[in-house]
Length: 127
Image (cartoon, rainbow, N blue to C red; front, side, top):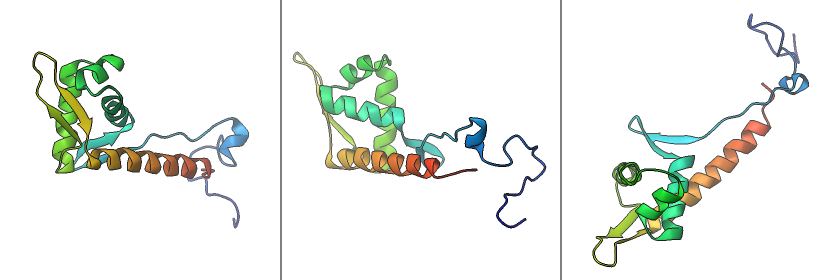
């Protein structure tokens, strides 16, 4: 049995190499903290859109997301991080402004680094 992977009674369809059967292993990364989603692909894209637009409302619109949902995601990320990832000034005649803090910038960079490492790990798996 050396060199062969055990089948564990799961049939023979993938007993050898999944790739030889046209099957690919896929996965998505998200980070939980205290049982709650902290960072995920969508949340990090929201952070990037806030960086690009300077506005939570504009970032939400660009993702076809309700402002209230975007605001809730930002508030939860800030709370779970223990510090602000997104800072803002209140609106008014000229509207408010939002930006990523240094902690927010670091969270975005670290998430994409982890996501890249995770995808590389997936590529190297052969079930």
